[in-house]
Image 1 (cartoon, each protein chain N blue to C red):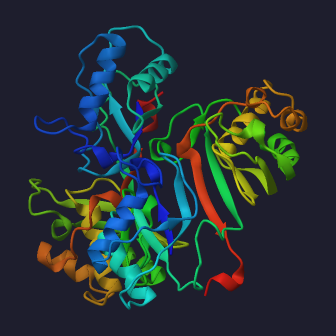
Image 2: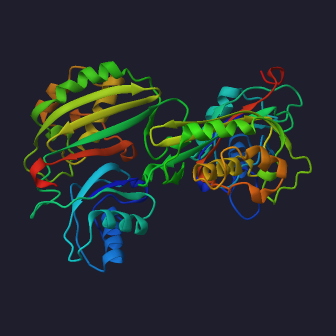
Image 3: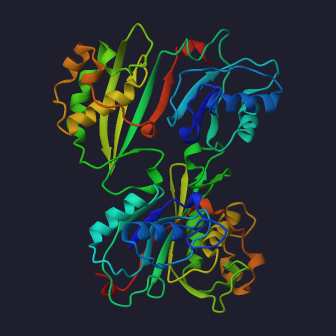
Length: 245
Length: 245
């Protein structure tokens, strides 16, 4: 099943005891529609305030219900900030997280000295003029297989911090600057630290050609700051074609 | 002064005793910045949930403060859903409402069977396919000077219900359908009833050429329903050039 959600009002994807998460709301809607208590498998954790244009989850149901009916039924139970945008039968044993082959994220910056009320929960406002071409060029140094330990929150518990970035682009659309990154996997806060590093390059706080040496350092302190969550979107999730219908 | 605001969290523009309105928040910010208690003059009432991309207000201050400083200072006091987007000195006696020569409104419909969480507070979702060309053609019958009593909420207290619509257009941009109307003035709920009437034309509940006879009837019951506020934006406010700097 594919969801889109505005993460503004949620404490991320993963169910937790002390705050409302998207997972809990989705499981509750499934229960209201089908009477079944299921634990859904999400493709990824997302942080509080982060959005998804396409989030994949998997679960099994006893109830014989077709995909269209499940989609329409859940959408009537879900709040307006979460939508089921697609649903299909998966191969036996399909798991949204374990079988995920890659993801694409987008980060949106509203590049303006004047705040825009309509972007307050959906973009980072940033006043200094951004040279998108410069950052697009610099971002190419992220592409490839690297140990991204320097671009991982110190709270990260992963032992293996090698990931492959397939593509990175930075482009301007009016007063928005859009960072798009695709890779086989991402560490905790990795996209937000990569974007923060590019913004430091924009400000001259980090040299435009410094990304390879920051990667080599494996030192979080050499990278830029973690930009806030509201500009971040999970855009696409990739699987092998034969696993989904 | 020009504001932009997301009206989702406000009970419209006008200060009231039992609910938070944009006017009250702006006057409070002016007080925090300058220490002066002013009553600002807004160009228009807007309903709860209605947005503004450009809202004009006027007020006088004792404090000698330049426009740029006033704008930046107020923006730091205002919440993120209200922004001062411009400020200039007006001619002596300028009044944002009395001197207003016209306005442009936009109404955004998200034309999709699947809800989009990012449009939940900023567009009306409407499932049936919209024929934007048909509605654009039909909407031309609104243009001109007419008695719009049939397109005015029955709660309207205006004795004179003649207004001039200068232009009306309906266009599609992907899965959004955008209604844009400009006129010398608008009655209570007038834009929302005009859009609701066009949507009834889309559904075949009202004939495509019926607008002149509905206008002639002066009967609110002949027009379509009032569409909800979250799709409505005050886009532009017009004044004589010589009144503003």
